[in-house]
Amino acid sequence: MLKKRIAANLVVKDGVVVQSINFKKYLPVGKPTIAVEFLNQWGIDEIILTDISASKNKSEPNYQMVKLASTKCYVPLTVGGGITQIDQIKELMHCGADKISLNQSAIKNSTLITNAAKIFGDQCIVVSVDAVLENNTYKVFDYINNKTINESPAQLAKRAEDLGAGEILINSVDRDGGYRGYDIELINSICDIVKIPVICCGGAKNAKDFIEVFSKTKASAASAANFFHFTEHSVNITKANISKHINVRLDTFANYQDNTFDNSFRLKKKSDTELEEMLFIKIEKEVI
Amino acid sequence: MSNAQNIVIIDYGVGNTHSVSNAISFLGYKKLKISADVNTITDADVLVLPGVGAFDEAVKNLRDRHLEAILNEQVIIKKKPILGICVGMQMLASHSEENGIHQGLNWIEGTVKKLDLPSSFAVPHVGWNNVIVKKEEPLFTRNDLDSNFYFDHSYYFDCDSKYVSAYCDYGIKFTAAVQRENIFGVQFHPEKSQTNGLKLFRSFFNSIK
Image 1 (cartoon, rainbow over the protein chains, first blue to last red):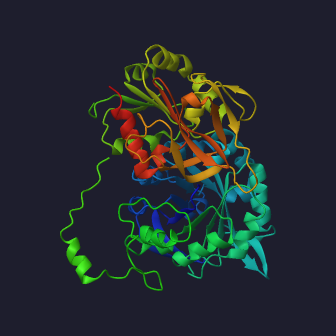
Image 2: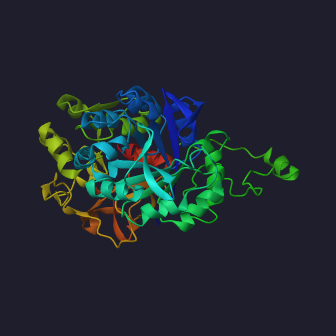
Image 3: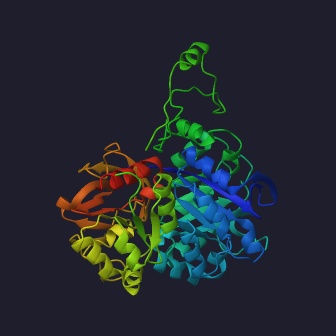
């Protein structure tokens, strides 16, 4: 059975992974290569690398960064930011990207979606939609011009699907970095209208939010950014909790299935006798 | 065999060659090249045909680089082992129905067809899914027989069950892996399937004498 995917969204600004809050405030986290390596080891299902400075600075995608980051990435890598031409997509694929994500092009240059899908296949093209709630209706947010446009996220998603997109990444700007949980209503508005897989993003605080979004929407994948950055083994610990309710992949050696958690899904300490016994267990590193 | 094989990843313009190379290098294979050069391909012990892209575009790129004749000689006459990945696997087929009818390499009889599924199944089929292994040797010897791998495709390879080494279930049961003599193919992306994918690569390269 197809498993629900847990993805990590790495927001990169001027070559540094940042913690983003409401698309306004940015706090530095570290190098993309290191973040990718750790997330990969912790059993993430997919990594989305979004360069938010490329389009703003009107520069090319940062190929060198993608090349370095992909070296330690043995899960799918989606790269977004600054993509305006087919040749750039070709170059990104050569640098180790598996999929590309289009945001500004979806708003302004829809032929790029169609042409890219024809050459690279629809499965390669993710269209990312940023949404805000304005006067009780959802609107598409154009982060370059810092204003909403007169199209609903659902309309844009449907248009992108018709143009040849293979996946929709729906991002709630209001929930971004707020730890208030996913915007279920927004995500459902997209899932109801498109047939292609939907990845949701924005607002995840802990395992409960992932379980909620998979129980209440048809989303294929849920992504989080900030939430994964600050705890050791954040991914496998979260997945251990999610897997009790939802079919997710839990293949890491440390799978935390026998651990207990508190109400905030934080790891509880094992009992002293258990810890004492563990002293005598030799854990061999798996050789492939 | 040790890590001394000459492995060549065929570069035909639209594959995710760097991703495949990263995964294989992780396993310690040093003589690994990404190339479309006839001499390099002739010197190879084993070939990998990666794939991301639409079928017609992939086949067209392969032919534009005059790789079809070279590959036919290496694989069909000299019997060099080859592993096709995703579209690389679909290209082993006789023909594909993606964006019109297009001829494949015709190494394994069969047709590449659109995943035509009930509306509850999103297409493309994206994500981690379990496979049902039919033939363990040589690709799946290190994997559990229901291991999960990363899939990302809208079309599948419809062929005779005698060529199928693994199936996958997504609304319909479709081909996840094929093999015929020295020709192997997987619909999923082992280079993007973490440990399970790395194990598959190891099994494949280790099986080559």
